[in-house]
Structures are given as structure tokens and as C-alpha cells.
Image 1: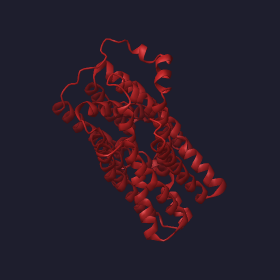
Image 2 (image 1 turned 30 degrees about the horizontal axis):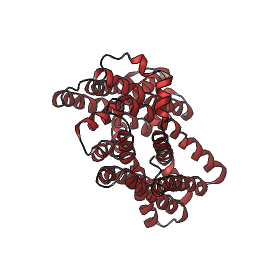
Image 3 (image 1 turned 90 degrees about the vertical axis):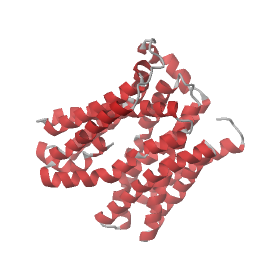
Length: 370
């Protein structure tokens, strides 16, 4: 996550150096996130075929190499290619890391929560570190932060983590990509239902990560510094509550923990649009972080509904599906903000959370078994 987030803070320097537009850099970043999402399913297939440890090491190593390329490429087309390669390399990690944790721990919600917490912690620290390095040594040196982090992580993981046997070492990987098998898994009602919930969460997360600081400035008139501070509070809350929601899902229920996050989201996003007092915006930003901690219980819910043999490729497949569908959050909320203003745009996010909450309550109330 540090490697992927290190680009955005230095976009102005990149555009000036390569003499390209923000839209051109934005297209490259979109390619990175798309490659990240598309590699979730192949990651699971590779983990089943070769073992999770090998794939995780490949992901960390290739991520470090990609960031090194970002620092040295001489032209923007090569830079854009390296950005997409970075997304693909990083995308190999999450699915196999999650299924690896599921094989080690009974309380998978809490384990996934600690794992997911790495992302928001990176979101809190990376912009500050990148800005500090770039101001002293230029944007290319800032790109090396990903490389500098990947090297010790690669060596420590290789040294400390035991090898994992592949679950399907003899099955041809081509069989895992057959449309019939993919369609059968995605057509199961509990998988459809959980994928829709995850898609709603991903839609809201994407929009929040893209536009929360802009909304705070444009809608409430906050300074850039104050809006950035609230954005950091959002990431801090998001990171600290991931293990908590995971533990709650282990201790009580997956759906109960998810209902807590969605109910918090309804209130938090409502506060963010209806009141400009600073303390209200602080509460709203912290609440949005709690709301976006749906990943631990919902991802555990997926794993609960997949057999051990299905978890690698199956979890990667649903990750690819809901991430691609949820990626429209930035586009939709950005377009609505232009057309109808930020109240309607962020009010939509409160509505999405409310819709998820209603779906969860209906499933529990009528015992639909989804």
C-alpha cells in the first residue's frame, strides 16, 4: 500500500517533469488500480498451484522492483507501464495472504483485521513521508520508499515464515479459469449477497478516499491543512478499528459486526454533509473510518462460505468482482458533486450504507440464510 500511495502526493512534480496533464497521470493511476483488482483472482489460483508463501514473496519482490522502475524510467510511457506493473504486483498479495492467515488462525476475523489495518496505516504515514523526501531530494527519490520497505519485508518474510504446501499442485491452472466453474461459484446466493454488500462498501471506500478532503474544503470551507488533518483522522480510525470489527465478528457474528459498521456509516456520512461545526466534522470523519472497517467481517464471511479447497481462487474471484464494481464510486460521486453538489454526493454514500444495513437486517429478521 505504501508503494501504491506514494505516487499521488507527487503528481504535480511528475506532470511538470514529464510535461503531461493531470488527466494523463490519472489514467495511469486508474490502470494501476484496475490491474490490482484484476490480479486478485489469478493470485488465488497461483497460491493453490504453488503455495501462498511463494506468491507473497513474488508480490513483495515485484512491488519493490516496480517502484525502483518508477524512480529511473526516462519517459512517461515507461513510467505509466511501471505504474500498471506496480498495481499487478501488489495485487498478487492480498488474496493469498488472507487465505494463508485463514489456514493458521481460528479467529480469522481478528487476523484479517490486523492484516487489513496495514492499508490505512500506510494511508496515514505515506503522504507525509513522500512529501518530506520529495521536498529534499525530488519525486524520484520518494518513489524509492516502496523499494526500501520491500527489501527488508521480503527478507524477513522469507526467513521467518514457513513454507506452505499448495492445495492443488497437480490441477492445471487453465481449469480454474473455465467460465462454468466461475459462474457456478458466483451464482451461489450467499456469495451473491456477500458480494453485493462488499461492492457497496468498496463503492463508498473508493469515493471517500478520493473526495473526502475536497468535500471538506469545498462544502464546509475548511483550509487545506484542516481538511488533511481530518482525512488523517479518517485513516487512523479506519486502521485502529479493523482488528476490533474482526474480533467482534469472531466473538459474536459476521453480520452483527457488519451491521455496526454500516449503521455507523449512515450516521457519519450524514454528519459530514449537514453540519459545518468542526467537532461534528471530527466525529463524522472518525465515524467514516469505523464504517469503512467492514472488510474484516465481510471478508471473513466470504471465507466461511467457501470450502478450504475453494478459498484461494474463490476468494480472489469475488475480490476481483466487488473491487471492479465498487471502483465506480469515484466516478459516480465526482459526477454527482459536479451536477448536484456535495450534499447530494455524500448523501448518496449515507444512502448506500443504509441500503446495506437494510439488507443485513432483512436477512437476520427473516432468517433467509444468506
